[in-house]
Amino acid sequence: MPTTNYNIRLDRELKDKAFSVFKSYGLTPSQAIKLFLNQVADTNTVPLSFDYQPAPSNSTLQALAELENGHYTESSLDEMLELKPHAQS
Image 1 (tube, rainbow, N blue to C red):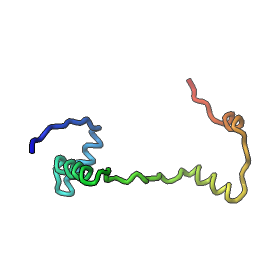
Image 2 (image 1 turned 60 degrees about the vertical axis):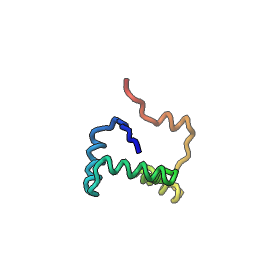
Image 3 (image 1 turned 45 degrees about the vertical axis):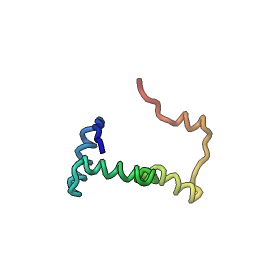
């Protein structure tokens, strides 16, 4: 089967982190990328999970707790915009 070259640009930090993981599995970057592409071709899907949901921030958790406890105040959008700190020029 004929081969082809494909070049990509990567952030150096991403490359270093990913390539060290490949190495820990005893894979060269080329082997790891070929494994990924073979999996995509064989399954017609991208073998990644896209259900990542970041943990809520502390302020979000606090707001949820206040809501559950009934200790909250209602504000209009205009009132909230007035409270928002303005960026300095």
